[in-house]
Length: 237
Image 1: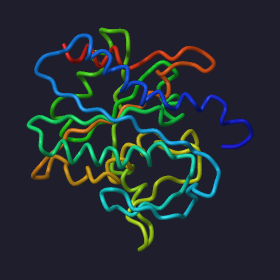
Image 2: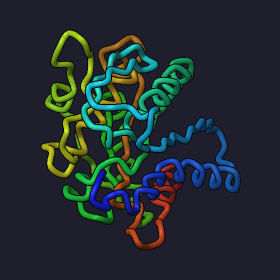
Image 3: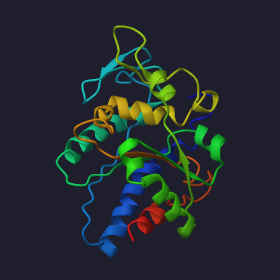
């Protein structure tokens, strides 16, 4: 980012902060019959000799060759390998549910406004009714969710364009200037983590939902809301 646009970007940690806050809820209320494993994905997007650059090709944990298109899309990059790690753990669980939660795109604010969380789910998660359950929990708890959808165009957008890469991380535009700018990153995370091999037509379907809290995490300057801790907690009831 340039021209002062980095101001306030420390708030991009709100997704990781949600994980910490949710585990605080779990430690207090101790819901029975529930196993939760969480990871906090964080990265410092600084200029330097170790910085990644556009057109660099990075191989993800899942073995997917990712061509970098926009160094400002670092959030999805750091989450992809953590999501892959969790996918590996989930494959051994009886009833797994995977979530990524991040202040990922400005586009979600353009789409739904500054107060709302967006949820995008794959086929197995939809089959379990996860998007609707989260929206219902959000409505009741005052921590509202909007349901968005991954489409084939989102996957096509990220599909590799040359023989050198399997997946393109992003275009060079801000999400606010990109068609389907908050849906596409969910497709990227699915592809880069290898979760596209665990859809509804696979031998081991794994339900996965991506949650974009760029709007609902709170204004800057201002106090973070902690969203969607309340809705997630209510969904466990």
